[in-house]
Image (tube, rainbow, N blue to C red; front, side, top):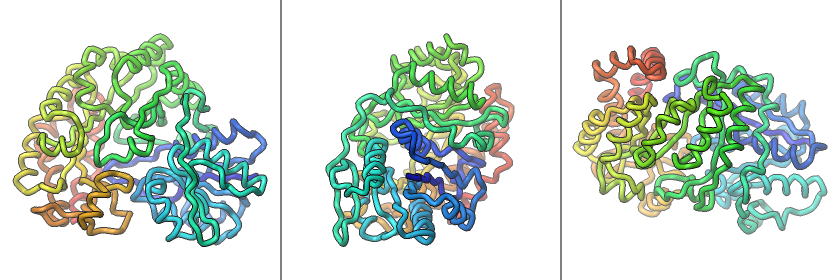
Length: 474
């Protein structure tokens, strides 16, 4: 049985700059299949690292002669890229079975199977066990009627099997299969954040989130639960990436790692192993967690954590409460100040385009963010992703004015507010960036900051023309 995993050709999100991450999702799946059956022929093709366009991908599929092709799920904005990959597969050989998964396709499994004949199977939710069982029954030429978490087409009928229970212990998962990409490891990079010599890798330390933000796909996709690998297991994976591939800059992909005892224990592991002197890492955290765990920040910095991104989102209690964020606007300034005090680069993610937004409310928002003064501010437009409460509300109320999934990227306005048209929301995004980064004192002070990440980031951004790209969107 030959299984081909594909990271399709796609454009990077321009806000990230020069950015090529390893395809963590599919190499995790590939490693799991390999751990269960080492007789299967498994191959991973990363079109980004290979520099493949669509013709080269087709040639690759023709050469590989796979029985099954699994496409990387990517994000909602890459939906049509995934579908084009599956179309390419079917053009090569209609008998090749095609599989997709991830948050977008899980949320819209029924709709996608009805609309896109190039999809054979949708793996809903956590994918490792479901995919393994699917490959097994396809190899044995049996129907997949009993595989939990699977949706598929049976003639003209769409079948949705019962949900897949979550994996009980994430420590049982093998390390992601970076060995499938060994010849490309030096190509992965995040120029804005890491040094060229650092190498770049991703680590998944946990899955899910205990919070239920209305605009977020994560908590529902992972069954409304949060599960973490042990500090020892996380440190083992980081050590493996450093020793085997020389990767010394790692991004924790967790939507919310949390900063409690587990993270403190992880820091102890990294310090005791001597990794803190060689490896730097980046994570996402909530502003209230930063405040509650302020006594751990110095240890985190010592253990190699130089960068934290926090979803500050908004300046107004009413909107934060509607989003079910359970944080306070006052948390924003304090959390960013605490990071600065501990020489940790503080990045804030921020949202405009709320249903009640007006020019005045967004001006208040800009003033607030200039006061909070994070090291880096990433402004995004409120986007109703499938699988979220926000999407259901927007669809029910007829707010959605855009049905092109390619524009569901948090940089394009897909719905108006009660006071602003989509084009006005789009312009406000540009004005938010200009308000923050157009501040001469902030810009020049950052270029010569004592914090090396802040220094490098602003010098990199100065040559990227971010504001010009944003202005071109409206």
